[in-house]
Amino acid sequence: MNYSVFVKIVVLLCCGATALVQAAEPLSRDEIETAINAAYAAYKDLQEGANADYIPALAKVNPALYGIALVTPDGAVYSAGDVKSEVSIQSISKVFTMALVMDEKGPASISGNMGVDATGQVFNSIVAVEQHQGAEMNPLVNAGAITATSMVSGGTREEIWSKILNYYNAFAGRALRVNEEVFASEAATNQRNQAIAKLMYAYGHIKGNPDQATDIYTEQCSVSVNARDLAIMAATLANGGRNPVTGVQAMKNENVPEVLAVMATAGLYDDSGKWLYLTGLPAKSGVGGGIIAVSPGRFGIAVISPPLDAAGNSVRAQKAIAAISNALNGNPYEVEPAM
Ligand code: GLN
Image (cartoon, rainbow, N blue to C red):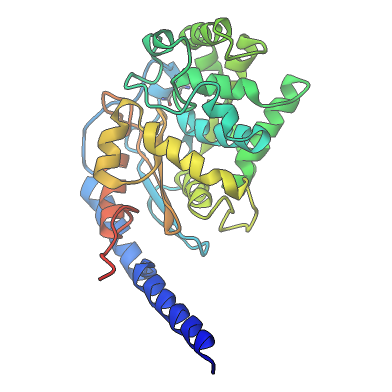
């Protein structure tokens, strides 16, 4: 063996050893089940928060509904509680429409239009729109999300809608349906979102018909999901955009980091900073009571529990996800020193 071959082998061995030290230990079935069951039991009887009621149909959802699901990149699904009952996806849909627009038009179409910064304001803030005339926002608050929906290409409303729903279906691994009662209830009471869309149109961010964009956005928020669906959707993001249960590449692998970055910045509305500080996890909540969170390369997790805190985030879901992730070392910023 000549000297340069010897050096190459030594370098390869050293790199391999470092990679071994840095790669997180795979999670065992036992560890995951213990963490999920403990969190389920710990928060089952918690009586905090209240269902959203500004959309009348959401006030009627059973507040005791509580389900946890976690999916690993090998496609294993773990769960506790009620993972069959469905709620409306609400703002969690914003993640997937943002991903669709990035896949169609590139991430710069989002950052260059409504922006990718936290607003520090509530999710349906009009002050935030006014502050920078609809720029310096993000696609996970209503103004940016309705704008993202308006950017999905298609000749007719039907074509745009079926593209959005099929895109969500690839993440969930099954054909999702719209909860027509929730859709009708929100469509009858969403004057504020209609106003936000008109402002985004006035400032040039929405190019097409703002009323159609609001209508499709309202329909996407009414898609019905259970905790298992949401966990598979989260795990698809944790697995580079490939659904670990079906094996389908649901979105372009190269756009996953940008999607996760916006979730980390703005996924829990004006409480996103507190959440990231607590868990390190990109996440997204919806006023239907669901939260998804992503530990890249490790797991996707979802919890559904309708009672919300003042920022509009499910109380039990935040507590359960934080407890489970911390028990499983899910925080991607947690790294052992190499030496
Ligand atoms: N459809 C709801 C709205 O536009 C979604 C809000 C949410 O989940 N935060 O108000």
